[in-house]
Image (cartoon, rainbow over all chains, first blue to last red; front, side, top):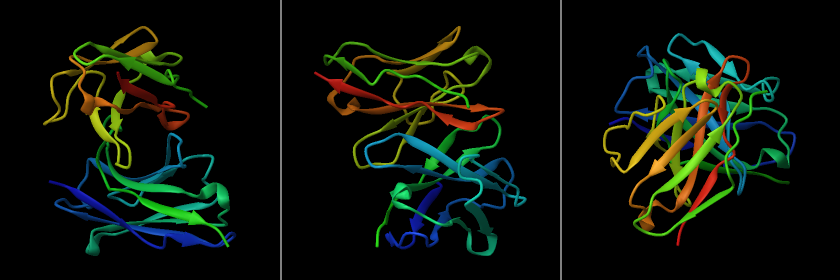
Length: 120
Length: 107
């Protein structure tokens, strides 16, 4: 059973960089066929896809966030990470990591989510 | 960008059948997935590839698609089904797209 767990600071100051890590257990992020994704949910709102990284290191980002976001992976630690630059209060959200099926792009395993608040 | 439209809310009495719609341009040519999100929890995949159920998901949940509308059907609704439900597709121009979500209330 694949399990994902987000970790990182719960409070980030405006204009700084949000950094989160997702640790994957029960499966390898080096295996083909899956993408490793970040999704966020603003308080009381719907889901917003941020982007993914593949086992080859290929990344794809939501065009609305592309200029500020970066996703990287450390296969030796079975982790992948999110960086979001120049944050504002509008980036306050619960951030989920998830495994994305590489064929039809559904999310079959999710982390529990991490609330990140942007405030001074 | 591609848009998926869901009703804000659906209500149904226990034991009845709830239907949640998801509409979008040319949806018939896309593959639709559905998620359940209970309060304070992560979303959970309940239907993928239009109509398939992941292992462990009750057969009371089913997905279908006709024209530009996909439907998640929940038979014999239970109190535990009360949650937000999201549809999702992959669009070549917009990548991953989620619907706005539908709150299912069990009366």
